Image (cartoon, rainbow, N blue to C red; front, top):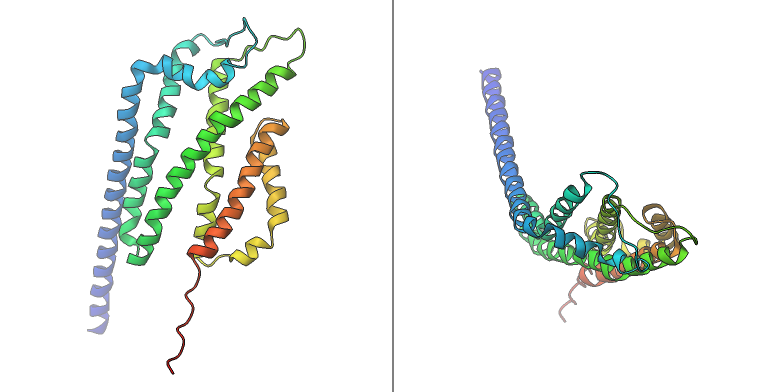
Amino acid sequence: MNSESERKDKEEKEELEESSLLSHLIELRSRLMKAAGAILVVFVGLVPFAQEVFTLVASPLMSQLPEGFTMVAIRPASPFLTPFKTAFFVALFTAMPVVIYQAWAFVAPGLYKREKKVALPLVLSSIFLFYAGAAFAYFVVFPLMFSFFAAATPEGVAMMTDIGEYLDFVVVLFFVFGLAFEVPIAILMLVGAGIVSPQSLGSKRPYILLGAFTLGMLVTPPDMISQTLLAIPMYLLYEIGILMARLMLKKPEPEAEAD
């Protein structure tokens, strides 16, 4: 009897786990479809303006080209495909808040009430910081970097960049700077999870500064300007993350005993 009862309990438990897994998969599919739908809607809206969108994205380089020089299209289909690719990546960047919200909505039911109160501001802050990093790359890094490239072009060499190569180049840098600006959020999550402490992070400042410049050397073009413009903000954001962790995750002091 006991073995029969245990077998039934085991079967019921397995069925419950299977139904729970199936419901999670259905929910995940729904969230992914909504995120993809948001990207598709923005992309369809941008398609009629694909040429203008590419011109806007290419303006940091175009403004630094010597007079009489332009960008070129080496591949036959590049004049047609590159603006559409640009519109898609811009749609992805534009719809990023919806994508992050869908990820948050999928994870939120499994969080405690206190965790939700902390997680929601982190989600909103991560969206803002990602856009701030992309804007920093577009308005600060690109003009300085392309100005340096134009000035360093050897005499007799025409600086005529392929539009497809340019798009691949700037998309990578947009994501790199967007993710680099997420450093404070990553620090808050690590400290909040108890993996590290603000004190231990503060003691590793020299290694973090060296690592920031090493990362800048690996993911940016081989020039000191772009490397420094990635490394310095990363290190400053690291310090901001430590400060935020000390203020926001400070343990409450025990109440004084009553007289």
